[in-house]
Length: 292
Image (cartoon, rainbow, N blue to C red):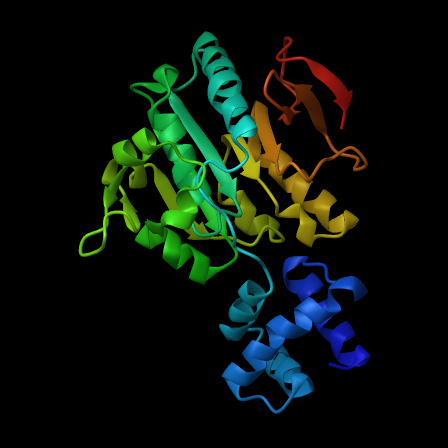
């Protein structure tokens, strides 16, 4: 790939999805694009780029190219300290607030960048076993840029690598051995868990699409911001802020933070983790440390 071709793809990825590839990730981008060049029968990178440009108004190749450029490695109950903060601190406090305000007994979490579904089903399990949420309407909105990843999430069948941080009793309670397979190899998410999760494709770079999510109580957007430059991060974070109800929480990956990014979020120190919160309409909540 020539420098000119790299710059062209760099601009296209930024324009269509806000994805950032710089000179340090040029080789990785080239490795991923070469698969699409071969799959489409394009003569070279330049020919493939022109095909993409001509098909922007309806071709599915752009979607295939975008999902080729992002990583989907994940597993159940990833980053357990943060999930403990969600289960034992955030959910009880939000439930208490909703009940005091006389709000509808409904709790919604958005997994923004759900990949192959492990995070979304993890959240569904946490909601279902939460004593504070018994009798509530529960929903996990799970979105990703990749249709291929979402197809795997819809199958809801996982191998041992996805269960590396899951206790055996949790596995047996919320999963069933996949029919026709070795029960020690693949497991299927039970219907009661799947019923909580709504899966759909969404581009976080597209504010109109994000608006379709509606208002939610908690957002997990973990290991997604790494693909955006500073301005892209701010644009995504501002849109996420607007999707949260007052006092709602944003949970990022442990390698991500908002310390050097001007946003409307407050950083909140909980017992188990540092998270971010949309400012409440009134009254103290948690222990704000800094303005993020």
